[in-house]
Length: 479
Image 1 (cartoon, rainbow, N blue to C red):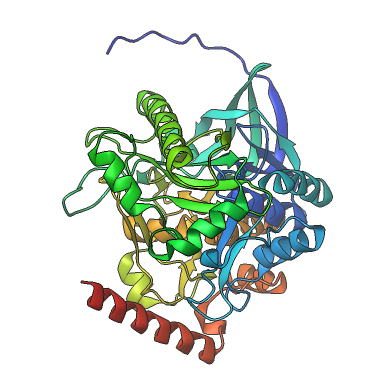
Image 2 (image 1 turned 135 degrees about the horizontal axis):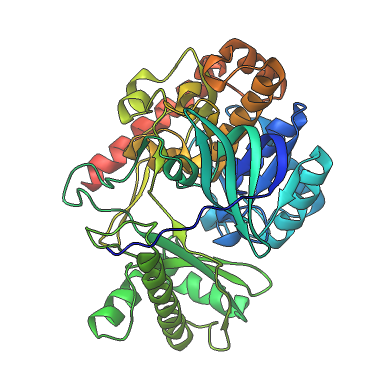
């Protein structure tokens, strides 16, 4: 590869803060609130024009597996406040209700546009300064400390200094670009897809559905269309005839009473030698995913009653990036930890998400046989950089643990823990590595966040154990 030398130059230091959060997804939202509400001067940098990350930019507008007996904290507060404000979607059909898996557990769907405005107000209320259209591209590092991050915007290049930095990019950008140890480059660790990444996901909206007509069609074809996953036979036949360009063999449709349909199906498979952060892979993926969406919409419009006058209303700002870089933390949460160890002395939140895999061949594998487990504080701390924390999909996880903890609900919980820890570090003038974990746990509990499975009532855990056995029995029967 040819190289050019970038000339050295002075960078203006635009901001000097206590806590700098990079990435405005659920992890970043939790981190910024946690830091600001605990007294830290907090700046949140987001590369796009709104907060919410995958919840707004890729239309994953939900919190999955919400159970207030397990999480609490900001997830509970935000979902309840949105509900009171009219932002939660209540007209989702019964087929979307996954609340049966686990006690008092379900998916909270909300209006993504409402959520953008809601988060703007939430940040202002907490005193978080937000910078949109600002992309962290590098760092100024002195030994094992990040003195500042380098940010690009339409105004040009500038630096932001911070005492503690939290990587909430979802792909470990800050750790990786700072030369800190990272994991996740390897993709699938074993099996037929060893060394390959999951690729990209995509959701979009169709407008103009005749809901009454479509619901009648659903009732007439319950096996094919009145399920969480629909259209298998139609898609199979269309692909066999060459009339459909689509990776996956089914579609998820979330129709609403106003004729708007949330569609999840397009997926893009990376080649074995490609990585999801490569610009050429991302470009090819965007083009391919759009091609799939238009092909799928044509199929629905021509074959499914109710879609005759429909149209593609809205496509996402970016694809849903799946596995990528994650910090190498002082502990890497593993499949063994999730299924066997369960609890840790330095636990900072409880997770009930099972692993969720999107395989390169277009199939999907959701493992429901996981009971609640702890995420330890050490997973949030970089092994090498003293003032770097992580939250969301950037935390220290093996591949199987990442497939669960990357979801929106646990991401906000790890964000709340990371932001609170950062504020305590600033207040006590210690690095995240030296923070007294019990102090952090006490503070998190005072904010309503469950910090460990040990705090969960035994009857709740027993219910999850029973559900896990039932899920295993179903898998064995299906196999």
